[in-house]
Image (cartoon, rainbow, N blue to C red; front, side, top):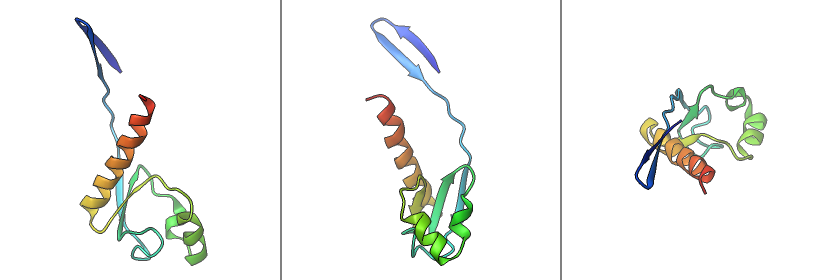
Length: 90
């Protein structure tokens, strides 16, 4: 993180590198709520397990993007990340 003073204003610059993995939901969104899911990094194994395991996995809050297209899933992930990052500065 780089903080520069400019008069009375401090400017904070943060550069993040993120690998996003987008997959087609195995169950067509039945448990996840979307045809595609976007993950920050690796995809948890549970999303490709059997019905019971998937149902249990998706019944808990999950940090990923969900959508009917890959672009919508990525946008949803960005939206969720912004909310999480924003929480750090409140």
